[in-house]
View 1 (cartoon, rainbow, N blue to C red):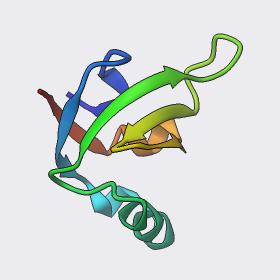
View 2 (view 1 turned 180 degrees about the vertical axis):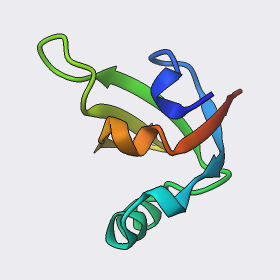
View 3 (view 1 turned 90 degrees about the vertical axis):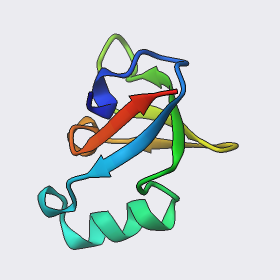
Length: 79
């Protein structure tokens, strides 16, 4: 499943990222934030005011905002 389909608060491992669909500077930023194959993640919540974008993503003890379009490029497997 893609990261945007992961239900909130369920842990998953990133198994694949389609770096080709991301701009090079976006891919570099995501890698610098620890988003790469093998990382353990969970969705804290989605959007504000009922929207689905951005996604609040838990990576370790860090929470970061991720665009839904980026989450579509990330394949995860539930733990």
